[in-house]
Image 1 (cartoon, rainbow, N blue to C red):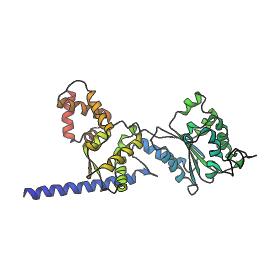
Image 2: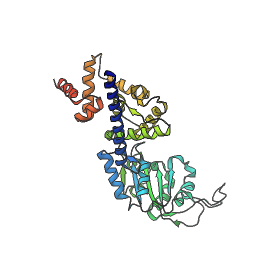
Image 3: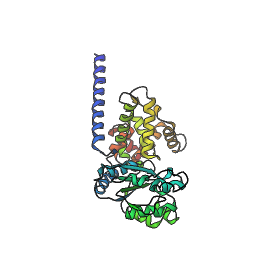
Length: 340
């Protein structure tokens, strides 16, 4: 009888996990826009702005910290535009040497410089009828900014060695993780170029400012890398979820993706626990614990941690109980001790 009850409990638990997995997958599909995933107010505002801008924009600026998904937002603008059938050309301004920048972006004619054996169109011309994405626009050489301004204002490009400019039909999306206003004040970016770029700005929030999106992002990347590494569907324990929720994520979504890809690669079972997490996340937990001060009893550590989680979620007790992996009743007992 005990064995039958235990087997029934295991089956119920397995079925509940399957239902949860299906619901998680449904949520991931429901709360995404062209590969950008989230349901927080901050990211839903980004979705709304992209939908409103895409049918009309000629030039747009995307800003945000490294790893927040600026290239995905640029691609979403292109795919939602009337020119989605045209080419989508990516130019990483930071990866082009300064002396080659004009040639790479605007093209050159045969004989324009030593080694120019044939005409070359450049990134701008290659994006004709579509979208040109200028990543890391803050790294563009000052000497090339006047030509870029002409491209933005008149949709004209003049290849190196050409006698006259030519008209092109292209949408331009620029992105940067730097403060362009500061670069203008430091005379590294032309003021007129900045004003032309910033007609429409889409600012992407940090992952730390949209922590409610963590469960969806975790599910998405777990499914992605489980399939890529030919693993069965993987799950995070409550403790592992809590560790991920407490981490500050300075590298934003890119760091989260890399972390999940790493432990999916080395996972031996179907469950990921705190022992499978990388050292930086575990050191983060240890540092927070050490910061409480002195040697404390386990009960006091528990109270301090519950208080930190409550402060982090701004008093949302349901969310705090979920992160802590305890029932609401248990959390209420802890709160009563904290308030005493």
